[in-house]
Amino acid sequence: MAVAKTIATELAERVCAFKTDDVTPGALAWAKAAIIDTAGVTFAGVPEDCVRILLSTPGVAEAPGPALIIGTNRRTSALDATLVNGTASHALDFDDFNGHFGGHASATLLPPLLALAEGRGISGRQLIASFVIGYELEIRMARGLNFHHYDKGWHPTATIGTFGAAAACCHMLGLDVPKTAKALALAASFASGIKANFGTMTKPLHVGHCTRNGM
Image (cartoon, rainbow, N blue to C red):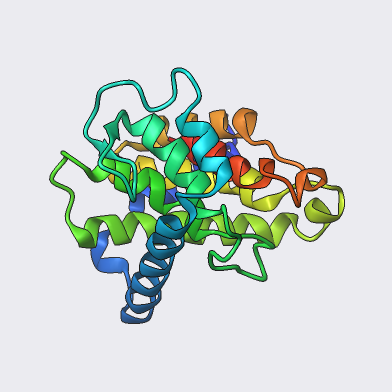
């Protein structure tokens, strides 16, 4: 008797099947614009209090590693750089917004991808392909969840963004379907973030944690 596929496996098959050449010219142009925009708001967000507090927290960004904390000369582990850069990317709340998603997709994708790419010989086209597949997964999940999910009090950037970050990282690392499915299943446990935190420094911290949890 055939065993029904899990949702995680169905998603993983689509993530793993996506190739660099599958990025359309339109998607390439929009991805470049989104990446440039996200890098810009991350630079601008580094001086904000939510980032300065993170950088002064014992244990954060103290591990050795090749990943750059954007806007500084500090390098640390990929996980810590992702946490800090993810928080900085949403510190000003000017990062790009998608209406279907009900949140800020690019900020959940660029920090972990940049941190993974450093020291791995990842090309720009490879990074963009992983960015696009993460973005696509987020939007398709959001179409099935929102706006009921949002109205229930969840912060989609943080919750759904965890799945997008996980998918994008799996794609960049070239993981197979079973490993990608496991990562997406773990993302369901790691996803968190509530709208009650809007207007506080916890909101950008949601993005830092969702990017780190996705990785």
